[in-house]
Image (cartoon, rainbow, N blue to C red; front, side):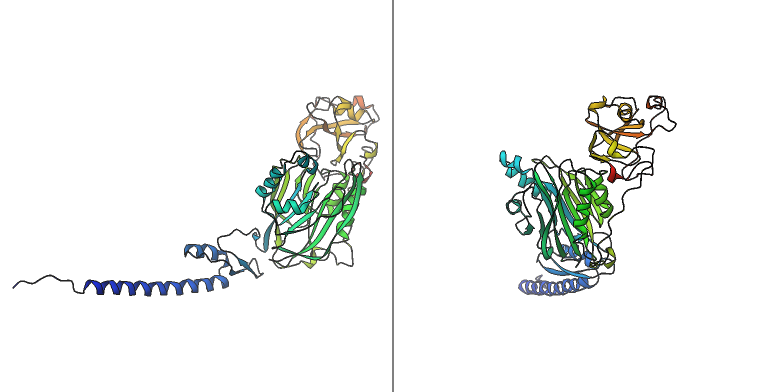
Length: 444
């Protein structure tokens, strides 16, 4: 007998069974994904996005529960898209803040609008941004990819508008302005607005300013402090952007930085805050002659912090002036040629080189003092680039850091300098001891 070999099941029946099996597996997998999504929003929010991508899910708007620390906040996230307000350290959500002098007259004169708009777009995205020398912030936002931002232009001249991402913040009440100074270019202002952060419920006082030229006095610093205190409500997190036209160590900056103690310091362009600085620094600013200062900051995810500031009915205390000065050096209003009002503590100031041949011994002798330290500064501030001997010429720069004291034993200043011994490094900023007068007595 001969038997013909045949498959156990007809070919078409095998095909049907294969299709049914695939459908069954697909249904089971869909149920598994749905189950995983449910677990994601209740148990493991940080892994939702990664798991969804691994499943090939691309639909936007999946509700996610974030649990930073002990807080729980529901926000909508479009899967596959970056979110600028992302979780930072436990209990905080990170936001990006910028400060930028737009150099308006120059950009307008040479028609460099495209370069300006591209610069802002490339250095973003931002959640809050303060502009200086910006006469039409609406057009800047529109052409820099930030048409969804709200803004407050503020008064002229020397406008310093501020803008915020309307998807991340809502205004609380009306914005406002305060006159803080005046120079040859006219009045100088600070603008502010109070905001509520959608993702955390935290309240923010957002301030921006453009300080006067050659006016870094305690009067200016007190005006800034008053402007903040008059609008700072209990629990507010404060951000103050600005081209202050004053460097760290000046009388004005000492006062405002005693109140807003954390900073991204870009020289005269800074972002000050009462909050947590995650990271930050200066970014390229061209076509402006200023850098773009950018910082990442932590916003508490459990809403306003009632202990962050005194109650609204009680204004925040004005910071105490720096430590008083003794007779070891004269009050700074007797020091000649202080550059930009920059003082650094420890009887040290940033002074002009030209009248004194770049030598700190000659500078100190010019008003009856002796030199105890000399250095070249890094960037119009108190940061030391390199030290020098008191009788050594510091060349190639317009200013230098000199530490001067009254002769301790009555001898003339010419006999006090001891070049054979290395000069001590000038004290760092904000480290003033009792050797010199309060900075609010230092001139210019």
